[in-house]
Length: 208
Image: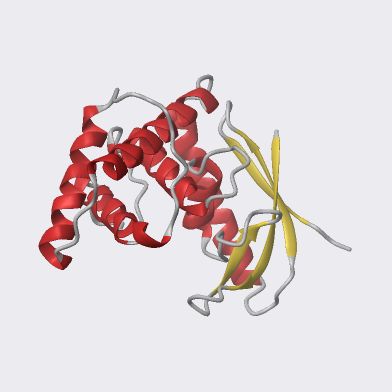
């Protein structure tokens, strides 16, 4: 089983109480069980010092896992994840490109669904802010999102999507209960034990 240590704390950006993975970069914030499941399952399981690239690759995993194979995993319980949600996420990232140096990735276009959503996000950004994204920058966004899809497939090549959906819901439920039990107590630690192959998860509180 894989082990993930979590700790309670308060989000600097939103002021909300939640948990985060121990040892993760600063851009990973304290959040709820749903967001933690996203961090564990959809963020790339690779050492990466660039939060912007990390988010692009996570979008690739979202496309592969939650958009193309509806499994009910969305913060909004009343509707499934839609392509417009992905377009909005990419548009948000495109808007901040001016202040970020994107590492260049040598690749080729293999997924035209990704090309389409990046193009739609670029058009939407221009309509709203009259901001133009260069062809090369759009290409790099496509490459990094594609890489996220590829990494997700490689990482979970032996795990069924059904089991991943079960694990996601277990993480969400167990972590939200843990957060509720220790509301306001910062620095409380626990360990999530996850088997991605048989769909089991349990949370062990770390007592000193």
